[in-house]
Amino acid sequence: MNFKRIFLVLTLLLLSACKKDAVDASSTKAFQSSINDMASELTTLEQVKFNEALYILKTFGVEEGNDVQRLEALGKLLNGMKVPQILALADQIAQKNGIDWSSTGPPSLGEMNIFGNAEAMQFDPNDIKASSLNLTTFETMKDSILGPKAIQVVPRLVDAQGKPIEFSGAGLETVMEVFSEGNRVLTSKNLMQDNDFAGFTLRMASLPPEKVLGDRVDITVTVKTTGKNYRMSKVGVPINRKAMLMPQVAEPAADSLQSAGPEPGSDPLSDSGQPGSSAGDPKTTVTRFLNLLNSQNLRAAYEVSKNPTWGSYESFSNANSGFGAVRSVNVKSISTVNSSPSNSTVGATYDVTDKNGRTTSLQVVFGLENVDGEWMITSYKIN
Image (cartoon, rainbow, N blue to C red; front, side):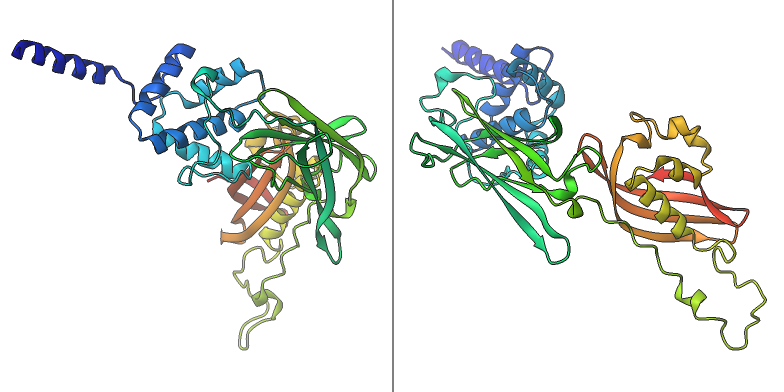
């Protein structure tokens, strides 16, 4: 009897030791098995939030593709991660996409299963039955000078009489696409959780002015339910081109000590020791450089630099590895770190949006040299 009891304890210990506490993406079967092992160590509520996090990551954290391709990409993304890391990543993705979800909030997306095991679900919150999709647009974020700075795009699943379908606890992938003259210029995703979905805020400043022709765009929204994808387009939606262009960074004012004139008792002919007394303020060169990147005048931006690591203009303006990938620049701050009449260091904090619409916040240190009376950028370091 004692032997049987010892054998049972050893068997249980062996099974526990075989359980995985991190994602194993060596195969689809291993991926699913490791997810199941990790979920089995959680409480019921934690399991629900864990499944919601996986759904958020599968829907928004990997590139487009069919269900199998997304699952493979998700496995590669999460390989080696444990539950807290997965929840933290899902929080980041949800915040980045403007989704009202957090890993610490109450369950809000229903029972989600990224592996599509429909047999385990008696009720599918994403199986919404509707007749069609209705699409409403209206101007918002109105400015007294620029006019409307955004368009609110609100999709609604409706029945045959055009009345909104009542539902809640869903997680319907909703995609907005903006077209100009038949060319797609912007794509955005969100989750429709209920029939009070706020929709998308299409900011004029997010539209690439070089790709938008005329003063109207076409907007298409797709809502994906379990059984059907609903799509509706609105053609010829007016846009406000005045609000499209990113604001230029104002030229920094000259230092107050320089503009105030010599102090009493000082020698006005002596070297004041202020940075760039003959070449001006080095911050002006950095400001001009960033303004030129924002306006995509890459040739002029290249001309204010003598940075050997950037190489030729072709390398500098390369669309894949150089500044040719930049669509816009939004400067937060520019300040002089240290300087002398011949050398200066300027720090800048700004957001860069690439041609695919991805925005990255950067802290950059520019090194500058006084070359023949002009400040030139000679080094560039991202912190």
